[in-house]
Image (cartoon, rainbow over all chains, first blue to last red; front, side, top):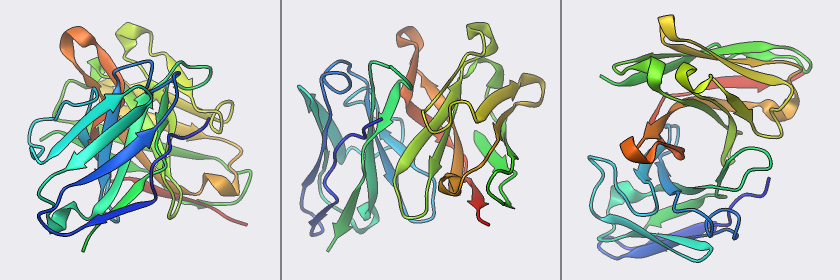
Length: 112
Length: 127
């Protein structure tokens, strides 16, 4: 099962905006509006921050936004803050020959 | 408080078996779908498998590395989901998380939106 492709790292200064990309195929991101994003701090469990492409769970900061175009999903963090320093993973539903979900490779976001 | 707590992680030899458990609290466990996700040391997230609710047949699906060796079951009376792992390999080493599948009401279960996670339990497979 091929993972979705994310950049290994993205960095920005406090207050800036950054975007993390997630590239899939016409069998996953391109086929469904079922893309999620997770934030994971070292040694902690992942936390859902975006689901259904662009919806935020209750309690998640409005600084996190996301979108999708064709086979590519994007997560934008606006007004970068020190606590945003973490790993970020996308995930997508996919036309299943095996398991119907696939994660991205993960992106380390560094707040400089 | 909505909570998931995993247990059962241990060090085992290749070829060994292990049973992980995840106890849920704070929500109606019997109606939810549950998932196991693992993370090898320093690596990314990987789906292990998912079990639907009993009303949805308690159907299970597994990722290729888990298929045929790992088995997920649920005990709704004890709000627990289990992951039975057989014939363990060195590459099964990692932290295993259980997570709840988000239910979106009219839109149903969103299998890739895991809205509650446990802290994880560590499995080490080594000779």
